[in-house]
Each structure stands twice: as C-alpha cells, then as structure tokens.
Length: 326
Image 1 (spheres, rainbow, N blue to C red):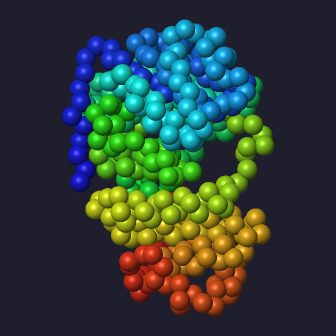
Image 2 (tube, rainbow, N blue to C red):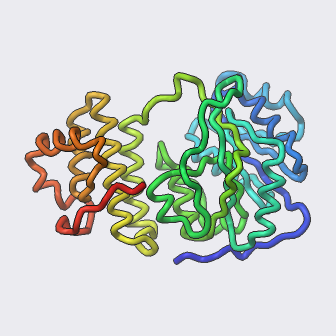
Image 3 (cartoon, helix red, strand yellow):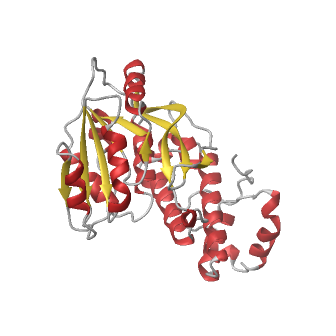
C-alpha cells in the first residue's frame, strides 16, 4: 500500500551525506570537496571504505577532520551504504558517489523543495555526464517523474544515487539496501521507496556524473539479466503487483528481457541470449521496427518457444501484444 510522507521540518535540518568507496583514491578528493563546499552548511559527511587497498583511508583523513570515516571488509556497495545509514544522524539523507561532483547549490535547493513539498519523501535532480576534465559529454535525456512513480520507474531507471535526498522517516520505512544484489541495488531500493512515498523531481542538472571514455560502453548482458530478475522479484514478491497495471509490468519486463538477450547476443553468449529472448516472447513483447530483423531471427532460433511460455510469469500468453513503452 502506498503511503505519503509524514515528515515536516523548519530551519536547516542536518543532512547526512553518505559516500561509499572502494579503491578510488585518485578521484574521491574532488567528490568530497564538492560536498564540503556546498552552500548548505548543516551537514555531516560519512565515508564508508569498502576494504580499499590503495591508501584511500590516509587520503580521506587528510582532506578534512570533519569527515566521519568508516572502514569495512569488502562486502559491496550495498553493504557500504547500509553502514552509512546506520551511522547517519541527520533528519535527511543524501547519497554521493566517490567519483561524481555536486553543484554548489544542490543541497540548498533540495532542502528548500522538501520543505515546500511535505508529501514528497524523496527529491532527485537531473544530471550531466562529464569526462575526467569536467567537459560535458552527455546529458539527461530521460523524462523525469514526480508523484507516485512506481510504474514509470519500473519501465526506466531515471534516478542516479548522487542526485537524491531522502527523509529519514522514509528510510526507516523502506529499510536497508539489498546486499544479495550484486547489481541494481540502488534501482531496487528506489522501487521499494516508490511504494512508500511520493517523489519530486528537479529538472535542473545539479550533479556531474563523471565517466571515462572507456566506460561509455553498452550494458553487459549479465548485469541486464540480473536486473530483469530483480524487477520480476519486485513485482511478484515486494509489492509491485499491488500498485502496477499488469499490462505495464508485462511490457516493461519483456523490454528488459529483450535488452538482456540483445546484449548477450553481442557478447556471443547464444544460449543465455536465447533464454532471455524466450522470456521476452513469453511476455508478448513487440519490439520497435528497428529490431524487427533480429526479432525474426530470435523466433527462428527458438523452436521450443511453446515450452517457454509459462516461465516465471503468471499472465496467459493469449493476452494481446503490447507496444514498446516509450
């Protein structure tokens, strides 16, 4: 059941900023300074080191004595964020990544919007993609959404962690990040949060997401496959079914399965690709015209499609095909 935020505040509430890191000594300094140099001053900065071996601890401690530094044996980014949540003392929680940069007024503007929007439990912004010299190499092209956003978010992940500020009351209801997910733990967390509170989007780009040229590659098949299974679990077991229209969920799952299959095909992993294409077909996905040739090949490669129909999904395959969500 979806419930609204019950939080309100006055003045300048303490914002706990959490940065998980692992062997990012070379870039984390600028990310930390972009937090400490915010126009909003009532904040605490928590850095959780997930077992770095490159001298990150010494470097972080040398930047500022106000940083609350925690070290843990390597357990993944979800576990590091959970340790940060456990240590946080603020009424508001913000997340930063160890290689990204905040604009000077980011927190001030988000806190002000939270004050004006008591029904919203999460505020997020748009962002720019920049290279290591902070030259803009990409921008936010996805549409941002406000209000109850579960359906929109299920179809497309348009929120990045460094853009978010969340009320402590929402964190207490949603819980911690899922440590059993090696990818998409942030995506799954915001899906669960979307069942508990409304979101408010800020169209201005207040975060610079840094990428190197070598990181601008297509998504990996394994990661997309795991993301598909995460989304299926969210719908089936974590409350998505209660608030989403079946047709929307079916189309989205089919789309994600198709993308995973396409990525696996490009990697030459045909058996795994065929399995994901079969799942997409079972969800009755109808791809855009640009993918029609590949889709016909997939159908010819799947003579056992009839056996794949039930899969893990409850809807009958007799449902009419759906168009690709925009």
